[in-house]
Image (cartoon, rainbow, N blue to C red):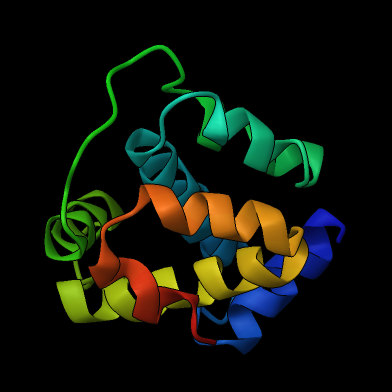
Length: 127
């Protein structure tokens, strides 16, 4: 999936309506998702994405992974996305990005990703 297709899918599945905001939301979600992953999983996942979307996932590669539950993850997203974005809006945006990610990478990679996230993240994979 090309970067423009990824962002178009994010907007069509509940992300922000304009491409620029969709790109910001996508990078922010991927960045925070990367913070949760360990053992090279971020690099494995990034390898299946368009080049423009790889860096946010891999940015935190050598840091100890966070062990946030989904509510902490969504609060952090809302804080980073700024005014007008509450945790519920962050949930809708995260679901748009993660369900697009689910469609863009192999099933095995999605299984690996899901295995590293707390169970509360499961609904974010449902488009």
